[in-house]
Amino acid sequence: MTRVLIAVDDSETSISAARTAHRLFGDDADYVVLNVASNPMVWGDDSFQYGQVYPVAMAGAGAMGGFPFAIKAPAGADGGGVPVDQVADAVQTAEDVAIAAGLADATPIGDTGDAAHAIVTAAINHDADVIVIGSHDRSWFSRLVMPSVSGFVVRESNVPVLIAR
Image (cartoon, rainbow, N blue to C red; front, side):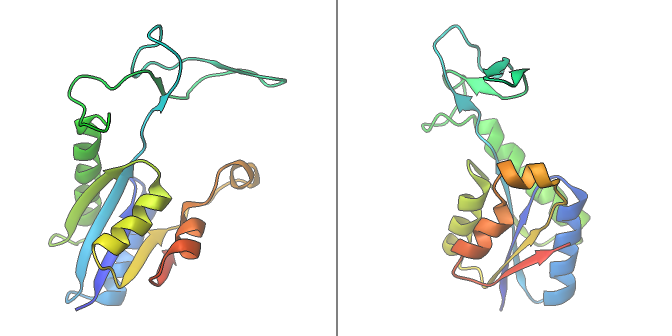
């Protein structure tokens, strides 16, 4: 039986990628659906609050907001400082995408951290025969400053990778 790891986020592209995987590999395949939540960045001292957004001054760029900075793990975090709710939310997102794509028997899993590394690691840990991942349309600037998750997975994975559009 073919084991298919489908890496998803909460976008329509992910649902489309999961449907494509189902169409290609059929009902007999074993599906594992993975969603990875990102961790907040840790900076500063106790004057910052967990979950608050603070502006960042960059030379020549003015002030920008929107980066989640955190100092310490909130109450209810696991031993690694990751809020337990993040993993539960990631599993719920994976389950929601699986159901929306018609994969009711899929195994939803959640992880936190860097999505690209988590996908490659999950493929190894779950003995995946193939990884299916969606492709997002990104601007030239976005491609310039942000690394491609699918590109990293293609380069680093030991199993075939299907990038669905």
